[in-house]
Image (cartoon, rainbow, N blue to C red):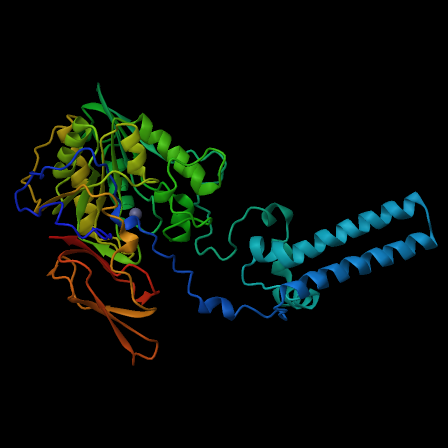
Length: 470
Ligand SMILES: [Zn+2]
């Protein structure tokens, strides 16, 4: 779905529980429908205009010339001084003085804004003086060198007294591992790959409490269970989809051990996935979208892996089960695909909330899969699966290109999540800031409204919804 392809439907919508349609196994996987490049909420273009107090020179050549003049001025002054007192000592002191002042200037125009106070905008030494006077004594405390280079945003709303990631270089993910009495599969369950998705975190907290050794009724029989409630701590503390480097973790796997923060987290996550026998990655629609509760998996080239993923997705027991092409890269599920680790992901609503029904469904879904794998004694509940869809087309599940907003503005949906709609139906309208100009947004495909935008502010090109085609 959501692509240029307009050939006949490559998958079938069915009401038959636990039954997947035949697919072409040669075509491979993709997923994380919700991991499209949703813009973070900080990209409103108007917000930057208010920050600019600098006198602007527009011409690039004029800017170069200005820089050159400063250099000449400095060189001339230094030359005249040395001519007056030509000695090694004077030359060394002069060099030290130039270096120290340059560092101070760098501190004033760059370090304060980027490491201490993002509100501060440098527009000359005068602005620095007035800023220091304004901030008074609190500023002098924050200038302590140990804080100036930690790259921690000063405006962080939850100052990390409880922030656990003091050792960010190591990127050991915070996890709990529970061992069963007998050998068996190693199941990895993760949440918080995106920092604004909360049902998973709450469900994993419940599982951690459930399997504490103090509760003898809830012991694992077999295998080991690894739980990571918050994979992407930087994104979590920002309350945003991405961390400070703005990289989407679900586009960065397998990452790099020596890369920027998200790449290092991706690397650590990938190592965990590669060492697991089975993997479940829990998501939601984040702050901007809501998703029909569903599980997804890649149409893996290996038939055995594919079948195990189907069974896991069905056992998880959410209404929609969606197998999609395995050919997209960067996801946690891409790593699992390459490691031949059977893996599924799940979505449950979103909108920045933590839906208690979602928390319960996620906890139960994980227990169901564990029971299916023989790790627990538990009776599997009756199936609640309503739709099973497999779409092997390359690019299926690629959300960025799904129903892009025609303009920037205020989005009001005209359909509900889960509605069956036709291509050309009114998905919603996007109003201008006065509410007078209403631009209609029409659905690109026919099918079930699987994902719907719930964050009203929309930028041109943002995804308004994802239709599960029929
Ligand atoms: Zn997500």
